Image (cartoon, rainbow, N blue to C red):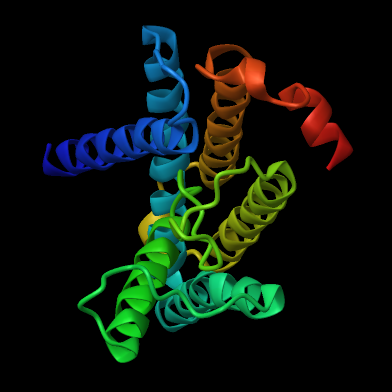
Length: 221
């Protein structure tokens, strides 16, 4: 019961962050979110987060040491990615976050922001993409290429972790139909991607502002 309540709480938080990110990106427009959009986001985040957590738990139950390496690589990769983009953009160091902060304080705030960004992206696609070169520290453009790469790599990673769990599973899972469980988790993650595509294709409140349809964007990526 507590696990279900925690999952619902996290999914609700992800849903609110999605809506907030849309309002921030399109603050010049009057955004009206329909009930169908809420439903698509809820199903998208539910399948995505639930399957990701389950995959990590199964992998960690048989390879306890290696799961720390997986988590560490994910965390460091997503934490350093905004800084790499900032370094490549050759933009000046952000100074307008808070006037009372010194350069050291601003650096600490930016590090905490990237830590939060990395923690979210370990389990689901972050609704707001951090961009340190932007004055608002949030990317206002819709980067289909980055999203496509994220979901392809995440699906491959989940499949690999499930394969390792299947190979090294212990007698504890003797009465579990392992192939069916693996198939269900992979289908569950694909269902999350499906509802994400449905949301951007049909239910996004600002879909008319997209330069191309979602299917065309992902196919081009």
